[in-house]
Length: 187
Image (cartoon, rainbow, N blue to C red):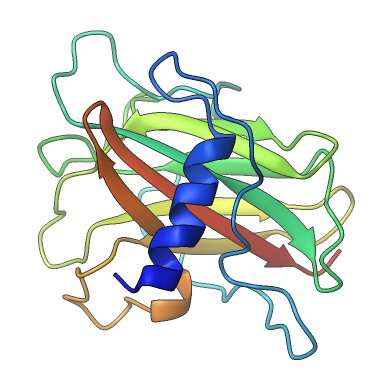
C-alpha cells in the first residue's frame, strides 16, 4: 500500500464508527472525482443474486466467528455531487465460501444519507472457488439505471473478472478490516 493510499484510508477510518469508536473526518475519494472521471465499471451479477433483500446495515450473522469487515464510502455523480437516497444492495459468500440461495444470509440493502454516505457491517468473505474474494453490489441513484458491479480486495487479483478500479482501500484493525470505496454513478 502506498503512503498516499494509507493516508487516504486513515482519513476514511476517521469517518467511520468502528467497534464503538467514533471518528470525525471525511472518507477519501476512492476512486477520485476529477476532470476525467470514469463511472464505476459494471460487472456481472453472477448466478447468486436474490431480489427483495431485507433493509439493514449489518449483514453479520449472530453466531459468526468470521473476521469482521466495515465497508464504508459514498455514492456520487460524475461531478462529485453526493447522491442522497441511493439504493445499495449487497451480497457475498459466507465464511466457508458458500452463498445462501434459500434465505438472506450475507444479503441486504441500505440507502445513502443526504451526503451520499453509506456504511455496511459484514464479514470478510471467504474465497469463493475459482474467484478473487469479492462483494457483489447493485447501486441505484433515485430514478436512474441500476449499476451492477463487484468490489475486490487488495492483493487478490486471482481471476479474469478482478479489476483494479473496483478494488477497495483497506486496512487491518484489531477489531477487523476497514474498507472504503466511492461509487461514481450516472445520476
